[in-house]
Amino acid sequence: MAWVLASAIALHGATGFSSTEPLRLQKATPTTASVACYGAWEAALDLRATFDNPFDPADIDVYALFTSPQGQTFRVNGFYDQVFTRKLDHGAEKIEPAGEPGWKLRFTPSRAGRWGYEVFAKDRSGTARLEPAFFEVTPSANPGFIRRATSGAPYFMRDNGQPFFPIGENMGWAGGRGTYDYEDWLGALGKAGGNFIRVWMSSWNCALEWTSDNKGDWRSGQYHNLGVYSLQNAWKLDFIFDLAEQNGISLMLCLGTYGELKDGGFFNEGQWKANPYNATNGGPCAKAGALWTNETARKLYQRRLRYLGARYGHRVNLQSWEFWNEAEAPAPWVAEMARCLKGAGEFTGHGADPYGHLVTTTYGNPEVWNLPEIDITQTHSYGVGDLPDQGPKIYQEGRRHAAFGKPHLMAEFGIDWRSPDSQYDPDGKAINFHNALWASLLSGDAGGAMIWWWDNYVHPKKLYAPFTALRKFADTVPWTLGHWQPLAIQPLGLDPNATNKVFNGYALGNGSQAIAWIQNARHHWKNAFEKQAVSATPKARMQVSGLPAGRYRLEWWDTYRGTPLRAENVSCEGGNLQFELPELAADVAIQLTPATP
Image 1 (cartoon, rainbow, N blue to C red):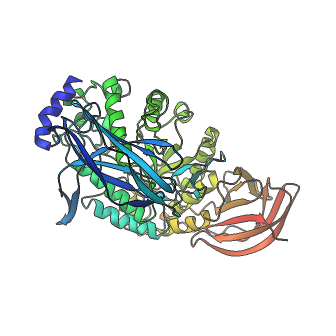
Image 2: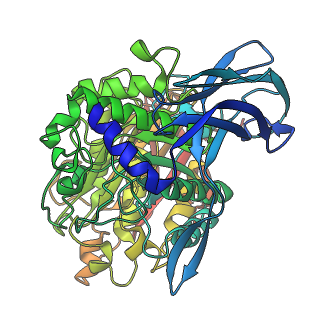
Image 3: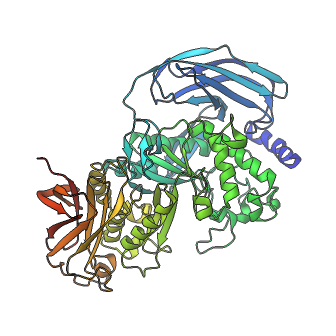
């Protein structure tokens, strides 16, 4: 790795990251003497050392061992940090240093009581450690980290067992206003009841490493080439995490995108020519595909994972790590990097993420989705303005991925991948958006489908009401109780396989109760866009099959307001429950629960 060290030494004089001081670990200064359970504990380290690259643990290794009141020990890596401030300058965000770089530790305790910790440092001159210290953790109502449901159901739950059903959108990157954009978007989404976003670490948003020379590619932030991270962007991502937490929102953090490994592209998104892993930029890979197999490249990626885990792993609102957006990473590489995060296999005892956050990627395939290290399967679904309704397709994708027995998310969707939904929905009716959300909920997906066009469709047209309605309904469903399976639902006397369908109907049951969504099949964006009159469906007798015999309370829900409309009692006999469906101009949701005697 001589090439890495040589470039680092040449660079660090300009960045101010290098140090030639004798190793001295004086003290750790916590920000508070106590912290609430699942709250963030942080300490600044008085540390001087000799190093060329503070982001290379082979050059300088800083970590702490935290011991719980029950005697469990957790290794948490330290990280190099710098504080910045932000301001708007003629409508553009300016991020400026507000202090000198230094070392920090972050930790999130999961139990109340007295915790202990020891801090260690090692550089080329030797090792140092601090005497054990302690802090108190007080009880709290924080539900904890997001996990896969312990029942085996393909849904999410918090550490305290509370279901977590993600409802939100992509917020891949900001415009020139940077975090000020996120402040507006997250405030609006949180107010509407949204609890989930997906953020990219791209060269034009929050990437840690990229080439320092601008080669005409999209970029935002100061970069220092391979293996030397942008502390400005690292601070920016921290700020976004904080904004999200303040608004009750969790993040899927996407660590890279396919454009980094391509040239050209429809949006001119290919950035391989500027990628620091490219050999023409001093990197180890003659071709992009070598990223998956080149040993140096893999070690550098693992080093980045270590920094990410040290800096952001403590965050309870980090829902998952996503390695790639739409890059077809091979299964062996995905498995290795997932083990690196989780501290499994060859990484046992020194995983990058001691908190066990969920791991995913896109695009996957059966070999990837079946990996034990992968927790979430994903799909992206777009048309080219030719698909009248995304709902049926999203439903089918959810059912197809049920075969993997893991939570599935429709992590991106839109009417046309080439242009925003506003082109097909200039009046902001949000019909495709609405239908996709409800179809995903009834498909067995672990969360609502995530629309892509956040900055040029959802926010400018103030289309947040669909999140509110879905959230209100989803919060009433006990997702982690039992195994929710599809139930047959159909209008009696009509062919459910007819080409010219009148209804789209989907239902799920967990063995004791059920939910369903019934849609006028002609109520879709294309008819609205073409100003085609859509007549209401006729009254029909509907049948749901697969419920235990007995009396049920059928509650009708307005899917646009997220409120119950009325309720009635119905009977299930011989596995079939029937009820009268009124005329439908758009759609309706129902809940079936055992009737109170």
